[in-house]
Image 1 (tube, one colour):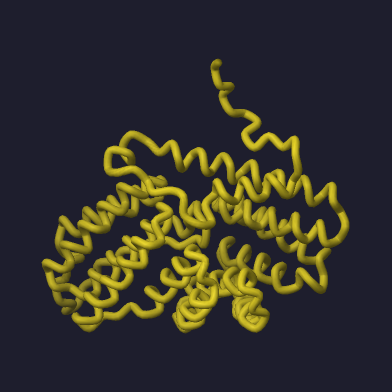
Image 2 (cartoon, helix red, strand yellow; image 1 turned 90 degrees about the vertical axis):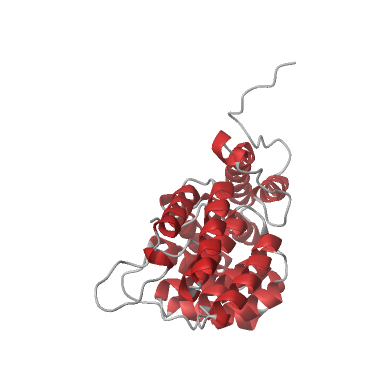
Amino acid sequence: MKKHVKLLLLLAPLALAGCGGGQEAPTARDDAQWDQAMTAGTDSFDLGRYSVAINQYRRAATLAVLRDDGAAIAEAGYNLAVAQLAADQPQAALQTLQAARQAASARGNSQATSFDLVQAAVLYRLKQPQQAIQYAQRAVADPSAEAQGRAALVMGLAADEAGNQAALQQANSILQGLNGKLSRSLQADKAEIAARYILASNPAQAATLAEQAATLRRDDAAYSDMSRALALAGTAASRMGDNNRATALWARAAQSAAVEADNAAQGDATTLAHGALSRGNTHTASEDAQQWGAQAGTGLVLRPFATPKTP
């Protein structure tokens, strides 16, 4: 399964647990229907068919309740919330998290740090950065370096938006403390949060780090995050007084975000048959494109290769 999401925050569904021997008790993972729903959900998620993924993960969560399996409820509930966030439905994701926490906890399985991570991302999307910071600070307790990095990224983004320098410093310290062979996503996280942390004191270095993050995001096909990093590099260039560079970076960010917004809005026949995607919430690609396009200035064509409209 891919470890990135072509949307803000790079949250991905949990991987299915591997089959093993021993005396492990049967769970919903042994149920063919549950496994089929989870696999179909993840396949759809990776293709960007978020409405299909939502339906499949919801089906898997319901089957897990039928089987009274707390671990499977936690896994399917987490994936459902991530898919809803990817589909720009943060309020629905928040409701799913509450239901999943309660149902899993009643059966002795909390998945606390995993739930905290996606809740931090949801709260950031809902423009509640201080609350997002709190949940991200809890999520960094996860033993997985990848999960720690995801949590630190959310913490840093939320802290930067809230002007919380202490939390931004904490997020940067966590990311810079991650060593060893890191994924491109984590390398990009380190560069972006470092850029945000030093933006005021060293905009030249911040611009370099932000562009490094953008390149890593592009290579990972994480285009929304790439656009965000390009826009950050534009802000850094502007603070350096390099207005031509800033304008070019904002234009690149805006054009990529505009295309992503168009792709998301179009959907495909399979996705639309399972329910239209919800749009119009905060931090969408369309809003980002408009904001960065305005910063780039008049004359920017957001969609240079769009099919001309007939009179």
